[in-house]
Length: 337
Image 1 (cartoon, rainbow, N blue to C red):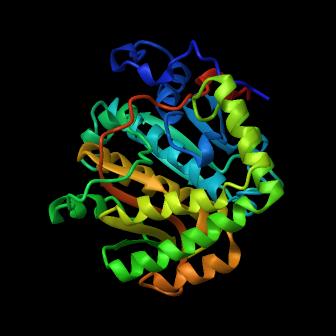
Image 2: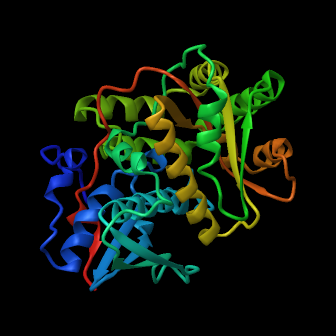
């Protein structure tokens, strides 16, 4: 298992260090420094990359797949899509066009996507420059949010980040629908924490340092998860923070397969970065979709019933966290090809 190096701070990547005179592989490897700052399920960072000439291959890292919590792998592929989107935004910022090809996975082998870069000389007009600046500032904000409403103009900017065909963004303000999701969330937390295998998996990853806390605290947290019934307390806390949020949102897709989940992850990262530029916090709350019968109930709330819900998250204003969670350096997630 590759560990986290506390002496390495990938979040401190500097734009001025881009190797303008370097080879294309050197430039791609630098851009991966932005890719790895993407969010992922439980901060497991389940991605790997291979660089060959002017091409990047993007893989889902099955060694970092949460086999219990993410039994259908949707969160693994969405996390990988978030990393891919960061890479594309960074490449565009430094004046490179990107041709993206998606590849359905076959028995864990082969990339889920490949990107071929070509120099363009300047950033395109289609990528918002503020998204690049937001990459190292993005946080997952798990705190209670302020009662301050999100203005319509800000909501329009966030909604505008979901333009892909076959991907749907539902933004929910209705208190009754939020209350219904609140009930689903409580039920999901209670059932997940009652599952010994789920708790053991969570405890294992806490001990790996994914939450960025010191080893002793991580060990105590993992023991508490494993041996104490935390479900009711966690459910109450999640219910409180969900109802404190001005907006609840759901990303859904017309197809339900790994490639589509990667594309959903790309949309999620793009709107998350836009929210960051607007000072809006984002917090995924996907527990409901980890429980199959509750997922079916949640699907009744999306505007197009033929779509499949992929990601539930809340948005609102709050003070950003003071520190980021750890990241594996790019060299640790790069494959030799």
